Image (cartoon, rainbow, N blue to C red; front, side, top):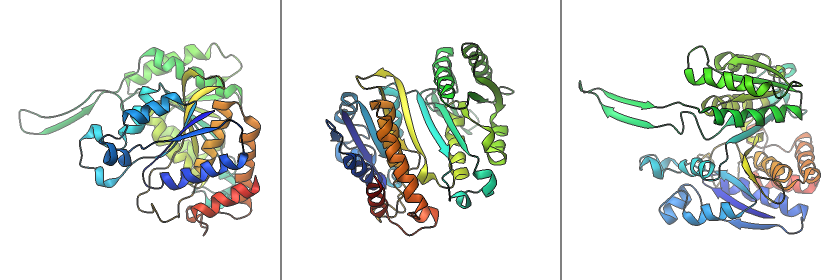
Length: 352
């Protein structure tokens, strides 16, 4: 089982190291891990945030365990060389069009949510976000108008096949959960969203056992903080999914607890090829201080075992160990605790 470990920048190195410790504690046979630079670290060492040898290592693997990219010292370099281009490049080059972001509360941590405990307790949803289309990948331009004003624009677009394939992921995910899909768009304003809604309804006809409803993104944001327990699977595009998934993290209590899987159509001999990462960033303000919470990365490793290697029992062991550590009060500063990154990793390993 080949795993490419791309730790990246900032706290990425620290949290990924703890996830690797947890995987090693499982003592799985036949696991081969390859480490490679990505992001600002790669730019400084190799002149590009996604060097060819890093991309080759990812392509050769059955799954990628990813940390985080981003470094404020790179803010003024050319756009195509900024650290964030590494993750966008990986998604595009590896065909990773579907991002699954679970958001569920942990018993005893309801008080950490920005919501009232009785509301936060009901959170148990998955955001299924399209990853390789939308405004992030559309044509971009800045120019000076004839009258001297500066103008910038980004093209938002989706082709129907892009919508169709992510919709199937959303409905198949709902089949394993509560059989409900909420498709989020802005069809009252955007032509892109009107096409999105039409195609989603066409796909819904193939899943009669799944209930579909539509919601405008502004209303979805409001409902996530008003009644998050009403959601099962949230299906949405790249831009809206980016925003809503961070909102969902604060409904849970901390961005340090949310894992994610980025999947495509490629199959390996074990399962579906994917890239697994925490949804938090590189947090340069605390990098190197041992303060980061590695639980989101550890839970991402659990998702990797389940989706890419078919090891559901081992994935569940990791998830139970994380839940038990949290129940025992093993929390970092993001959750009001005093445990550091390595201590949290050790606690999870002990509970395995």
